[in-house]
Length: 207
Image (cartoon, rainbow, N blue to C red; front, side, top):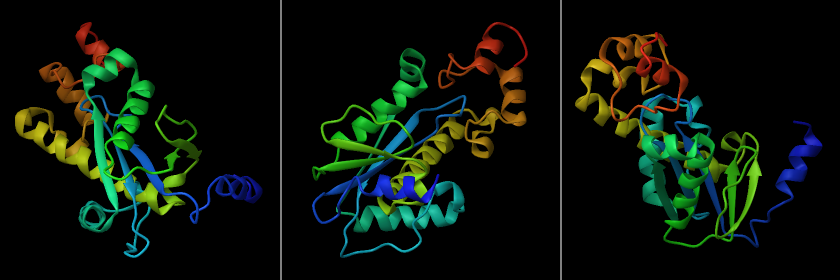
């Protein structure tokens, strides 16, 4: 993105006028489990060092930052859409719904929601999309971290329930290991039946 485009994006909001929440998702690509979204309003009086895109942090860093965000943010929430909802709505619409649920669940009402990416959910507040916002806007970085850690925790629960699928290793993403276990053991209720590799197993073909 050109510098002028970035400047135009950030001219869309004013921190002195708007109470901003950042919104991001985790889990659009996996074959199993929910898609998560989080919304975070940071407290300017309690800055949190080290916030950045959750994908650029190690798991221990994410876990530590998630604790600080939950402790020090003015407000935060995490929401999700289940695998069944993803199959019913499609992943884009399910992601937008999870984001809307996260915004609506905040204990403090923001005046502006900054959304990571190039699409915005229908919401009760004004929204603006920020491409690669999870590495540009602290509130979106914080939301990225909460969404990622919440989803990872659920996938560890799925691993305890279905240890033969090794969800602790691939977190539901279509890795070679996951596809191998999917062929060997079939489809669980937590798999997304609308995704091609899962459809292939259900149809009796190799993914």
